[in-house]
Amino acid sequence: MEELLELVRKLREEVGNLVDLRIKEFQELGRRPSREMFKELCFCILTANFSAERSIKIQKEIDDGFLTLPEPELAGRLRALGHRYPEARARYIVLARRYSDSLREILSSFGSGAEAREWLVRNIKGIGYKEASHFLRNVGYMDLAIVDFHMIDILVRHKLVERPKTLTKGRYLETEALLREIARRSGITPAELDLYLWYSETGKVLK
Image (cartoon, one colour):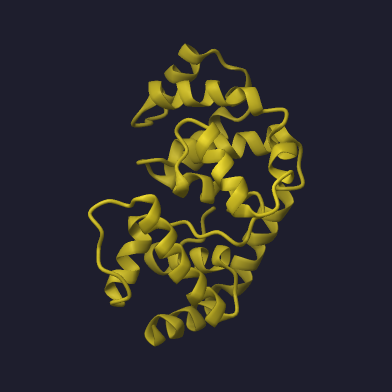
């Protein structure tokens, strides 16, 4: 683990200001109206088994259309913009609209990010632990880790985990606990750690 902690220390010196700026943007979004938060939820629905960078571009193009477009038209826009699963993602987004005006209130009713995540996984079709954690991080929750196979690759390279065949709930939470410990020892939050490690892989600080 010491090697990874040293990497994080160097990354904090290199891009700490950029990470701090991104975290402030997340916290600001968490103070915005429910419908703005809902559009971020739609972004995270799009990212499942798809590129986050391409999902950002699609989100910018569709914007309020996530709230208003009929399902066939939304699917058509997603297809035209190159999404891998346009029909399924359009269906999930339209189903989730029932919460578009109440999402912020619902999330604020929970005592922790973990509780809010459980609600999202149970109630929003197309959202698993990774996507729910990603969304909550992007609206200002700092205590959850976004565990995907990019993150697993980093931990495997540093000999901190063995590569799982599938990422079950149990394995997700186990890996998240390890990332929490790395973050704690680095003096940062799991949300910040994710941005630093993502930068180490891509050279970018995305949302």
